[in-house]
Image 1 (cartoon, rainbow, N blue to C red):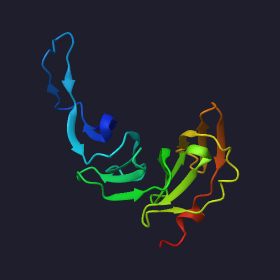
Image 2: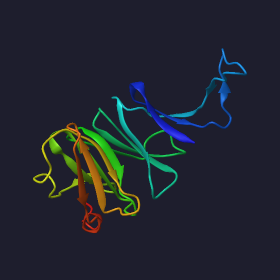
Image 3: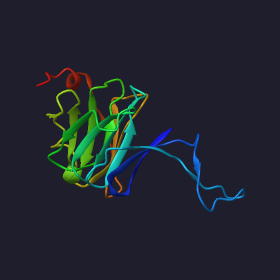
Image 4: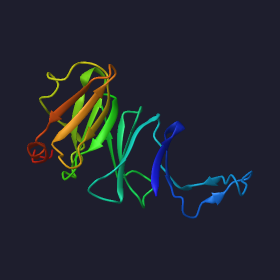
Length: 172
C-alpha cells in the first residue's frame, strides 16, 4: 500500500494487490490501475504526503491551500486539520515524538507544530536560518535530533534539535 498526492489536490491510497487491468493492456505491457481509495482532497496542489513513523495507520499531507491534514487510513475525511499562517513547502513527522511535526517554507520559515493543540510552537530558529526559500527537510530516523534542511540555492543546513522541550510545552 502507498499514498500519493496528485494533481488537483487529490490524495489517493493505492495498492498493487488487486489492481484493475486497464483497457489497452497487453500481456507484454500490462497496465494496471492501483487506485484503492480517495481521501478528502485539498483545495491546492499537494506539497507533501508522509506516513507517521510512530503509527502505521496515520499519514499527513500539506498543500498550497496552507493546511496540514492528518489522516487515519480507514477514514475518508482528515482526523485533524491545522490551518497555517504561512505556506510550507515540506513537512516531516518527528520520530518518537508522535505529537510533533516540523515544516519549512519561504524566507527561512521553520515551524514546529503540536498536533494536539493544532498550533505552532514558538522556537528560536528564525534568527539563525538563512532567509531563503527552504524547499526540503528531513529528520534523521536513527538520530532524530538531527534535521537536514535544503534551500533553493542548493545549500544544506544540518541542525541538532532537542525535541523534548517542544513536546512538553503546555497544550492550549
